[in-house]
Image (cartoon, rainbow, N blue to C red; front, side, top):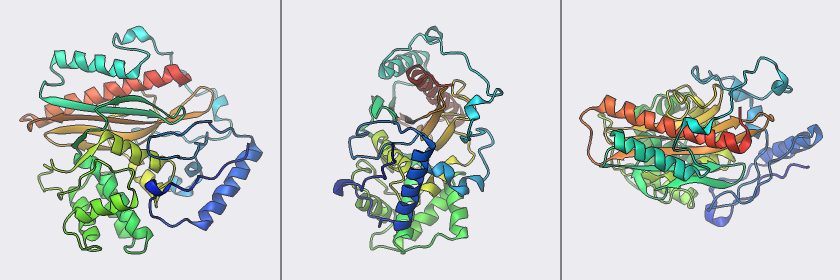
Length: 372
């Protein structure tokens, strides 16, 4: 089956970046290579409510980019990269199938499983009555949302807004307004990998110099003008204070999902660089410490934490026993009405709640696709 290059985005979801003829030529050649090798495509229908992304490949095109092999891996993730015949190696450990009775809240409906688990956590005091949550899980393979709980409501974004700021900067680099030098690359890694607030404010200031709007307003304007269908509930109205107590920037779980989906399908300028940045070593809440998610699962994510918010948003690429790959987005947000007086304790407990929901999600995906 020949590879079909990604279709041009519709007017509503136009990113504003100019098409790259060299990239089109590369993708066409890559499609021919896939067809020659006999690789299958994953059939799917329209994936989301905002556009028509192209069908995913069993092996995404960016796996072949040499930049992935030039950067240090997440030391606590040990990501796998598909190689010919890897599924036939005898040293790949087998994991036992998921036993539904291990989690009494498990259900064939992931929404119900998550709701039952959260009810139990509220009864135990691990999620307080003055805290609200949002969850979203989207399966790229079937093109379906598996869980949407408060997904359309705007929540505090904390550091989860930082990949959005990176995208706004890359839009300006793509149109020639700004440059992406080695120094900027280092600052970008500080912002995404180490969640540096100082580096974040540096990029907001650079963006501010390119337009008439003051402060972070130009960042939000750039995102919404270039990607009108994605950042529908996003508000970027403040710099990151030295204390890190940023409560006014907001986004919804659906905004994070739409961003991640477009990123997965390379619909942004510098999508490969954004993926690299979001894959650099860090301690996340959807893989690190999530005991049911197998070691080596590929993850692209950004956490966010304040005295009022604990969250994570990212893409996980699960591996099936049949050798295929099953990517899905996972967004989990817990927001407190008032700042906690026990920051570390509160952050750790809520982070573990998000990890357990990630466990529930992976086990649900395992039942659907016979994952490792």
